[in-house]
Image (cartoon, rainbow, N blue to C red; front, top):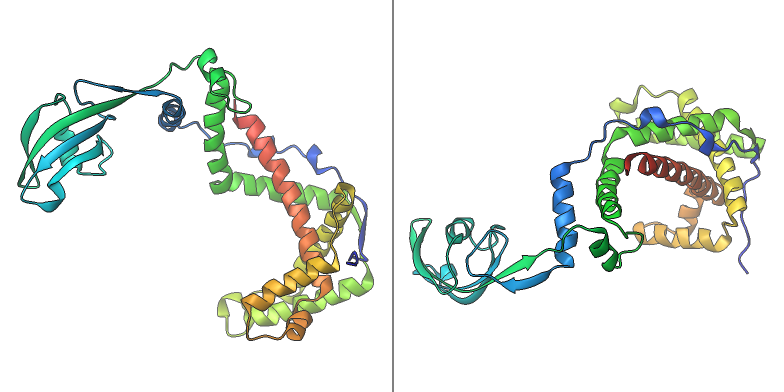
Length: 304
């Protein structure tokens, strides 16, 4: 049976980081109205209907026959979404305004192409009304305003990934969490963390002039801070009913063995100890919790 693995360092008091005010970081986002329009149309198109049309407009799907000395323009019954440029931007542009059944010789890249419009299919979008949106059956989306917020939320997700403000907010939350929490560091764990910091510094500075400016005190402080972060994470995991076991560590070693086929399992265990594994996973748990709080706060403020 798998055994639970824990740190000896522990957080005796964990500050509620969800109390940290990060409103000042929620700046720099503006709704892209053009993209919003496209996203709304994309959803409406999904629930719209197709009907035959008499004259080609941009956005229609046209079935056509075309004849030419150039092979790619010598086709029968080819469907062309007009305006997307997937078949030929120049040809699609000249087709706009042609009628169903009409045949016309067009010039594309200096080549004569005879085009016959066989069929024109047009998407008819439903109106953006509360009644129509409710009929779509989208989870949590029952009104036109809900659908707009749903589409804006897509833009917010991109903002969260690409903008530096969420990262700055997360760093600030961690500072407040560290400042207001109380961690009892185990002396043995702390000493071993510093040894790993020393080894990491030697690895980074060996033949790397760009890393030569790093000093031992800074590297040790980074590693000890991760230990504190892990102690907090261990407490958060316990509150959430989550645990780390020897099976988790074994699975971690399995992945390392696959990634480094030239290394023995014993060598990997020496370089990636159980203690280092627990510190990494528990610190990651804290970071994910903070990131989740930041993302939730940004979404609540920006998706209106």
